[in-house]
Length: 452
Ligand SMILES: [Ca+2]
Image (tube, rainbow, N blue to C red):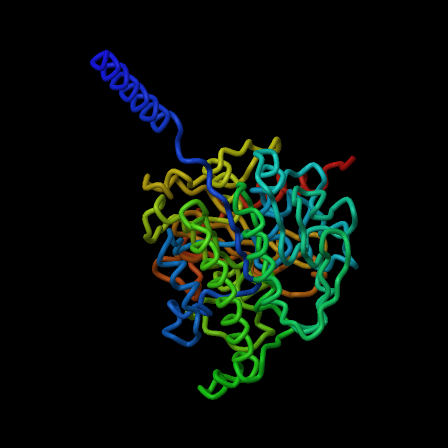
């Protein structure tokens, strides 16, 4: 009897072990939580690890070291709203309808077309809890509100009209406007992000933390600003650096919360900025790159981008020229999301994040001017090492077609876009102009498509 029992329990143990092994083999790690953090107008040169210690950003520097860092990442636009439209849809901003900046005066040019699918829509469909904390800026009006675009929980400002200063602002929190006075905006957003994570610790979540810092209106506590003016920085630059330091501190607290909740290895944290530094916010170090926010030169479109998922992604640097339109297809692969119905412009680099070689980079395009697009202005095409540029002419609404000749740069030997090689390479120039024309026709047809 004892022998039979022993045999029986051994068989049970073996069966259990086999079942466990089978389930471990059959079930891959569940898709991660995702926190997509976006800074506003933050320059690559604002980060201490990239600026020889001009600023103090220990938490962001640690985040960068913990993940896959994209050395050649670009936004999809040189300005806020279009960049965000591409990030949320995986499509060029023009296709989505978001091409200009001022939501109140140009509502039709700053709204995501209603038939666009957002990242938040996809995460919602996959059963994630979704949240937006911070800036929206891609649609004014009820039908274009983030709650109608996939975000279940919202603590946001739709445009900048509710931000009088960093100490006096209003947030729309789940349908009601709430004013904050004497509270620092960045700290409030950081705390709300942390609260969101705590609330949803047990569920898969997608949090888009869209910070406003270091966007104007500049403002930071005087004692912190003084630590930078004491080092010789002008007042406005010192204020920007103080704003970045506070942003960094909040991100540090968010990462510490993930550690405390034992969620860090189950959470993919992405950090980026929406465009280059604002030239109106004071002098900034940005590695001598030509141009700034508003320009399609590298200074306007190059941004920090890191994907950190400890335990899954091996930390390192990638030369793949990641672009904002790539984020949606990449996240769709990593998190097993369905794809939107509309065709995507970006490519997935999910396998690359897991160690595979980088995918081939398609031609990339950027264009921006205020109001209705004029594709003779401020347009760039990136084709491998080469960059074609129709230079920026004005930050105001253009008066007509640009008469400034297109330029051609070879970025590996001329990263600051100082030497125009158009005359020496007329065939390449003509080919890229033709590619730009074809792209413009395609995105313009999409932009102006009939909306129900
Ligand atoms: Ca911006």
